[in-house]
Amino acid sequence: MEDGKKGLLSARPTRLREAVEALPPPKGSRTRPRRPIAQLREQLLGRSIEQLRQQRMTHKAREVLPYLAVETRNPELRKRIVALTIQQVEEMRWRLLAQMIPYLWEEAELRQAARARAERDPPDAGPRWLVQHWTEVLGSEDPPAALARIGITEEPILGRLLSHLELRNGSPLGQAVLAAALDQATDDWLSSQPYTETLRTIEHSTAGPEIRMRLLAMVLERYIGPATSWQFFSGGPIVELMNVAQRMLRGWPDERPGTWKQMPLRARQIGRWMHHRERLDSLFPVSRPDPMNLSATWRRVLPWIDEMRVDETTGVFTMQLGAHVFVEDPSAPQSYRIYSVRRWWRTWRAYLSQTPRPKLPEPTHQIQRKEDWQTAFDLFLVENCELPSDLDTLPM
Image 1 (tube, rainbow, N blue to C red):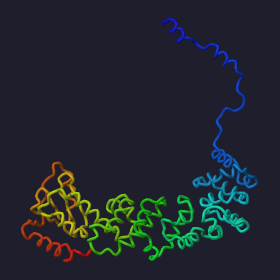
Image 2: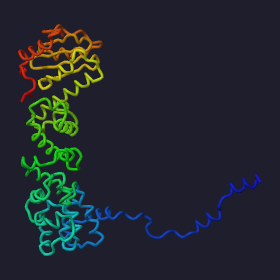
Image 3: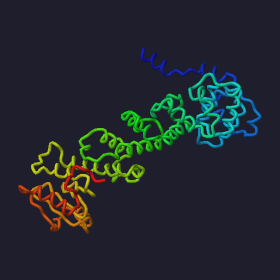
Image 4: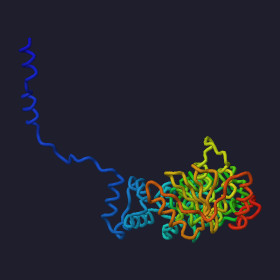
């Protein structure tokens, strides 16, 4: 049995091999068929525009053409698609044209050809922007502005505008309509936008980043301007809005000054304060004992802090208020030091560059935290740092 098994396993199918070798050679192409989109792209780029204007398209090619129209970054292909669409506009189904026009709307000759057909054969099937508003899209010199004007009268909520018009959000025409709607925005219209829904539109919609940034700047201008009390730091709509801005702009103003430059000055100002608040929260978490009440002390003056730096190694932190710098050492909370801002930051950089940290120079002032230290602290702020006696009103 062992010999039989060995013979079976070592056998070779010689007759099968002979039969395969005797087969006749294959005829015709053995290459895999090309995809219709790639095939049509190759054919279009292989012909001149003049040739395409004289050719007729098959039904299959017309059905594929909208998939090439979305390739807006290929100018040579775009020229040929436009020429071919103009030549075939009378024969194409309106639903196919509805897929292509949002990507080719800037081509005036194509719009004129489609309008001439619509005047004889109005579109009776397709999205709302074409069936109900083809006059504005095909007959206006500025289709996005005309479509936005009529669109926001029917659906004033910006985040719902394109879905109401049944216009694809990612298309060039859709983006242009949203930009035109913002161009036409009034304060009354902005006030009528649902607050939470508008924040979701800013942060999560598929609109282009330029449009979302514009809307963010407009909403910040509308809601941040009236903020006059620092009590908004305790939470609420303004904090929610500023947190959305921080996520959209990938940081606070002193972290990303370039991106925040597009935002209103008041928003940049409050953004810096909120960043200071975040850093204080990390220095003084709720779980950490704070017998001297340092956290509350510095939170009271957040809006007047010009600069805040922290030594992550030792926990020493500095606050610049006007012409003075206050230095806090968590290991010695019984007192705080005050330095003149002149040449201070050079001293601070030298301090951070050394390991272990050297002793800081003697301060200009040093206040001991005794029974009446808070009064002395407030008096120093008013007399030397130009802070108001009423800290409940934010600086403008």
